[in-house]
Image (tube, rainbow, N blue to C red; front, top):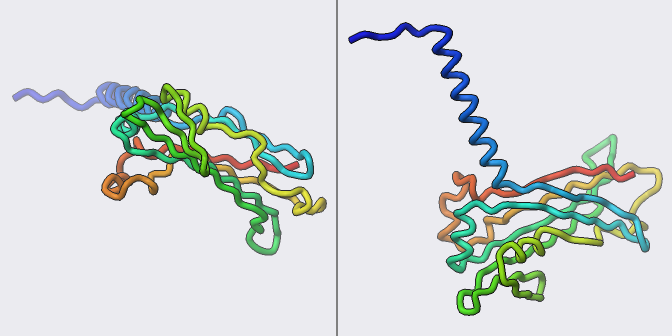
Length: 189
């Protein structure tokens, strides 16, 4: 049996193939994630409000679950902190919004639930457009903010797999398809 010597050229070729493969894998993982298109804070009418808009493409496994009637939840959370030099930063306010997306097979509609309100849509894309944005979302009253202090906001938007039916949660930790989300931090000027 003839064996080829392991040369630097072979090693370089293997490294190039590995890097190309990693680049393709990273690109496909990024395409299944969430991109934050807009995240801004405004001071208006005595309130600190937040606007956000996210763009996402769901992995095929999540779409399959939705098409089989499994409801999926998306959660946005904003936490306002005041910087402190002597201790942990103080949490001033925390607000959370949760949306439920479900397919209704009898009517062939997609239903979005927010609080006690429900709305029907003809396509999944229309339903996702509603759950991935919010305008004038009140974070706190401006009276809670001290003019001499520095504040920042931590924002997260994610698919909440903890609200899936219990049998589906088994083994989800190892499945990257169910880990969708984005986090950002904004300084408040």
